Length: 392
Image 1: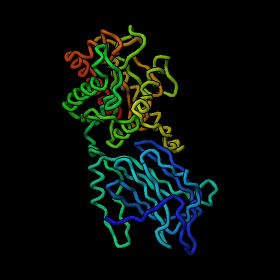
Image 2: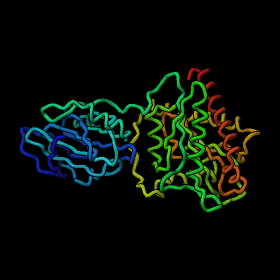
Image 3: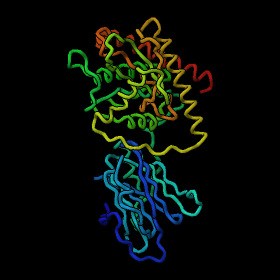
């Protein structure tokens, strides 16, 4: 492993013939995805490679003078340390030390709005440790201390066109316990995980369906990490499972939520606010999301995805009808962060409310959980069949 020089923000540049000027920088994101943008006076060439122990992403540049304030690249999101500076009179380097295995899934240089300067855009995304280890192995080092970038993040399980892939997300986990039952012991995170495993097993027994869990043990995942795992796997559906509590202890029954900019009602808004607060409860900083590309195609994708999400919600309600107790107006919508994948139809299912004695009893009943999982599996299969019939 090569030894890196100690770089620090605003390290003095060694005189070069005509170094590039990096005159601006900004960073945004969270612990699943982080974007860095660097404004430069001319179009740069660059190369990328990776190091482990600790995880580092190395971006090599031609001779560059870094003229922006150090605070403009303050480490956030995936990165716990960012250093940049001169290597020699012909080269400079940016070293991004990550909090977990990560990779640049998009790198590009584009003209700025004036058409005179350029922007270097680096989009980093978390990746499984095994894939990162393989990435390190695949790099082909050369004598000039650069390495070949081995491509984009591969899905955890390669997409099979004949398989309909369902991401089953057990809400909460780890330090984020969620709601607690009236016995003061049973926690929402355990109920959702047990049901998620049961549901995944039933889905995997269905022809043409493959299910995977976003978490398979008692671990904390941020809301953004859950969305990212679903997208990296090219999920066809995302189902997030919860069993919340309410102040109104008489309210009971299953509820299906889809995403919307505006909450359908006060209760939906309160539930969304509480679920969106999970990251703060777990002590994770909520960072600004990377700016979405203002693209009409992306907007159309989001609208189509939302329509599919609503279709899935309706299939769930139809399957539950007369079989599973549901809240009044059981399809509701609000701005749930865990449902934000622009290209994966997603629902959040409240299995019932731990604040209600009747619901609590059912949530702890193995026979009822089997019945609920069967009805939900039927709904997913119905959605799959109708999607295929309509050419989806």
